Image (cartoon, helix red, strand yellow):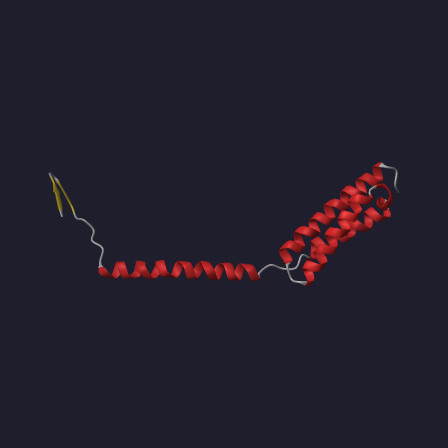
Length: 120
């Protein structure tokens, strides 16, 4: 207890029980973090929509004669899609999703180039 003129303040003491419970909490934190990481890695779902978008964009670019007017972009799009399909078979959904998005973006570029060059 501290004494100040006109004010009495008691100092809070930590009990042995408080020290034990904080030690338990500290030991559970790393376990909880590892469990969250493990669960988070399993939750990833296949990139169904991204794969579909990429295939449709490539088909549209091919119909616009991108093979003639933008062969580099179309080939890159097809290459990214092939990588995404392989990664999908390997259940590497994160990289598959990224490559599917890249494939779609390249196909859209190929389509725009083909349309600007006078394709259908």
